[in-house]
Length: 306
Image (cartoon, rainbow, N blue to C red; front, side, top):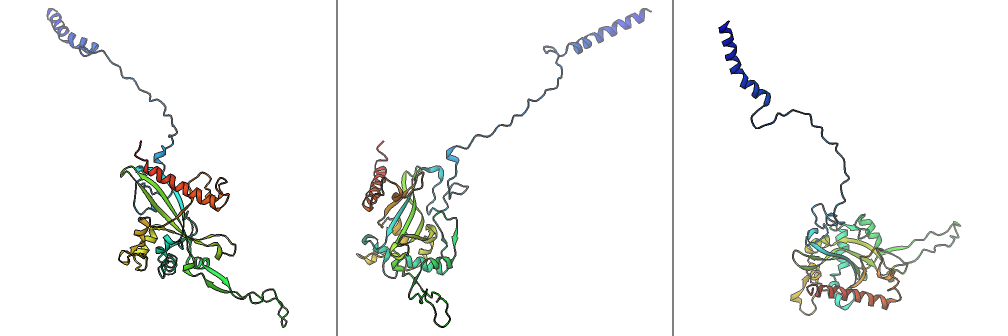
């Protein structure tokens, strides 16, 4: 009996500390309980609209470069951008080097379309192409005898069908071009660029039956530069020094042409002649064009004054 009591006392002494530690937990730490954590409900939010700088303008690819530009400038480097439309009369004295005999720009363009080296478009939006036959139809004129249209054939008693002879306008008669270009400021290089986008051939009013000017076809400037580089006749004629004849692309880069602004980017997409403040007469349109030109020059000159 005495031995049994001694054995139970020894067991109590051995088990008591481990039992107390198991109940209270590790020293210095409170007993923790495991509880299930419920995640809060997920609320779907509408993403905010992209900032203006992330909006890709028309004709810009996903990488941020204008696909119509000859010299690429990333859209993030464009601090200022404005579209201009300029009309060139190639019969003016200052533009005659672009319109020398057998080197007429209009002739080069017609040959490029006829040989399949140039793609024509219906407008400067470049959304719809034009086939070679459609282009040739645009530069076709109707002339000659009408074949007695409206008269009655005495033998058959029927109306005589009009038989008009078709011919094409002479390239030297197609003397009007319209350039669409972007005036932009590249903040990476700190300079202005005149970035020509498209070139449009225009039918003069004196050749049009309707008596108004009408667009013949539009071409990408990049395509024209590539085509001119492969054509030895595509040159700017220097009448003062033939040793200084220049490639047409170089002449355009040097701005060796004279032009008149006929449109500038505006919310209504209006030509100058459609704006009431300018369409009083031809003289007022010319004054408005010169005023816009001077404002652009002053903006570039005064760029570093502030």
